[in-house]
Image 1 (cartoon, rainbow, N blue to C red):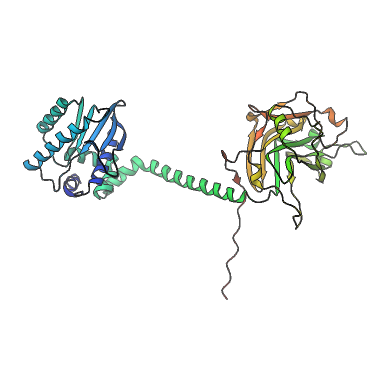
Image 2: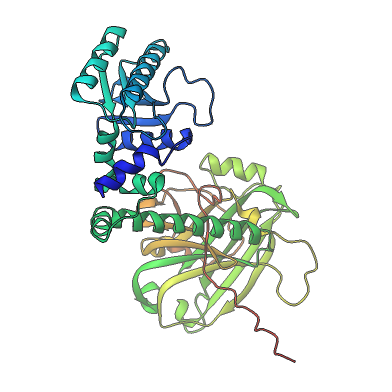
Length: 430
């Protein structure tokens, strides 16, 4: 194999200067003394006597030049031509601004130690502090190492032997596998984002906040609860600027029973104006005493109770049924929206994570480290009414640990799709 590499370096790249420069760049990149190795003019043009730029030992500017001959045979005539090429390139490279302090020369002619020493002395006279020469034998040594196998195969078409393949994959196998996996992951992430951006134009069928509790609770442990969400759109759409929606238990019945064990009632409201409420949210004030706001909505339904609960759901949904009588919000309209959960104090202390879901997409997840309970006094007029006994468990707000409210951001985060569309079966053969 060393003999094969030596033979191919003599003539395999004859008349292919671009491939010669790229191979030499790959060889120089294998030398740990050099960093930031890059072609000077990869598409041709005046190069100022150098084909490669690099940094030597982390600080010195280096210039690399390539001087190959066709059908190298190490004759005295070829050596004279290469020595002349060395001097011309060194003289031209030193004139670059700022001038390099290191000169590297690549040639497919084999030079003796004495010949290399003489060339280095000439470069020192010109003004180079350091000179390195990669003749054919020096390049062969680099290409016949495990790190050089890839460049050797790419530029000289020399296949790896069985032993070399074993050495190569022992050295690089894990890195190659990781690179391939990372590439596929990037493609998948891009496709996921494109699919979401396409489906974000769909009508908002439902928006749900899931308050995941820190453990499974018996109904009697929770008792009365209230869980609501106040959401502000960035831009008013179809007369809707803000939403208020949530759930609570049915409250005291004739027998004095309370809690979600006996049923849950749901409600949602919409307000057409946004600007004044958005300003209050940014200032940390959330009073609903502004009479210019007209909330529209009502308790929209309920659900049966349960003996235990691991989570509490609150949902805002659009028109149900087969017909849509007016334009409605789209999923895209939630981008940039700010939202603030309002809970009864006893329930808020049990919340572990908040999940935000809409149209089958998970839009956000807020864990306990990212939230804090704001139990400070505030004036609030909730559209839903509750008894004085129920309000003995006071309202609290769940804020961000570093922000006054949470924000849905589709630019920084791509929502995760939680359903798979099925394919329609193929037509039968008629």
